[in-house]
Image (cartoon, rainbow, N blue to C red; front, side, top):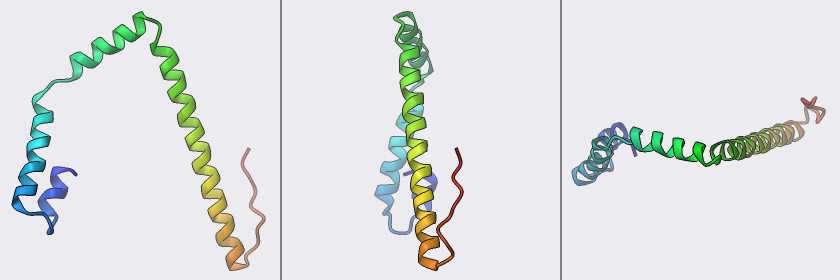
Length: 92
């Protein structure tokens, strides 16, 4: 939960708000950029960075395809239920 969410959530107690702020402040205290740069450099030097990138890209494309298919199915179900027809042109 973000600090903004905690500040305006009426169901949160003051202790819960401060606990959330404490976690957020702890994250701000550390600079992760040098760590991440070293990690990326080491992965690249061991020829592991590009395979990881390609695997992530493929996984994202598959997830995007599943989301599009689910949206198309939902749209078809709504049209079928309303009796507006079921012929939806598909994008290829």
